[in-house]
Length: 238
Length: 182
Ligand code: SF4
Ligand code: SF4
Ligand code: SF4
Ligand code: FES
Image (cartoon, rainbow over all chains, first blue to last red):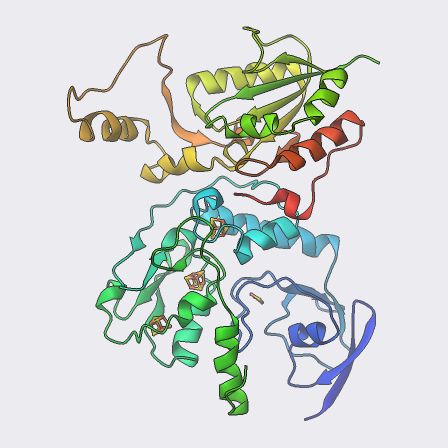
């Protein structure tokens, strides 16, 4: 445990050497946009929304997986960052089929909220309109691959909070996808404990509780926080 | 001051955006004093006028007629506004693109042959029923668009915000939740 001192957006900050830029920033009330980060599970740097500038480093660094260092001069907001964040968002929208008007997550979606917060008024790239299935074989939950942004939050909570290891990633590039067990219908999974943590963790309309319709998929993240606290503090407190 | 010449047009959409426009309620009365509605589904003008200041375009570009009028509009209009999610993103009409990026034949087969209980057959009436485009496009893929007004439909207060900015001569700029899709 050693403290590091550095600046974020001109503010002098100190944090433990183990802290990420994202943690240090949120500690002092600076919000960095994120999509794949989820409090309580380890970070993988998948979405690139949290990119920040560090003086002297030519490339942009993901705040969620970069540790703070002595004397770092971090900038979380600039023309350039706004440009890249918007591009990243537009690519996410162009890559799969997002039809917010008929989506279970409409008005409760982190992707949608981030898009309007960051000023995305339209998508400049051509939509690709890929063909993806919906897996409705599970008795309690459904997975709509059309809305998945491959943040892998569901995979990480399934392995590291629930410990079931049902969810995985298969394939590469634009054809990569979240699978259950050995790439089989979710309903036939032998490892899924039906805990619903994956559904609670999903930022979009890709994972949903069966029976919800347009705009009805609201998530209760405190359910996840409760378990994370229990694991970290060994106490069942809300 | 000359009143602003405004047009509204309905391409491949459900008319919901126009319904939302009518939801402007008493603001419509203010508007009537400040604009001249020169072309719209709600006025009886057959041909698109030669010089229009602002055109709100509802709906995606789905068929040959949509594309033709869109080019006419672009030619005769100073400022185009993509009005609602179908115009901005393709939205629900563009779901057919998931059948392939050249889906016009597939989609007709699916609707009029595979799904038909009686008289299967694709209707073809050149000159009456416009041909479907191979895929549905948001309007900015076909022509240059100045402003985007998302929402399905855009709520009346959002339409009002944009129109107020246009009328006051400032560069329209919607921000935050005013840009929400869906
Ligand atoms: S997942 Fe979010 S962004 Fe995608 S269609 Fe649903 S509400 Fe819209
Ligand atoms: S319900 Fe639980 S066990 Fe099943 S896939 Fe989701 S996180 Fe894993
Ligand atoms: S299903 Fe949801 S949580 Fe899982 S990778 Fe896709 S968007 Fe992320
Ligand atoms: S939140 Fe850092 S890369 Fe996704």
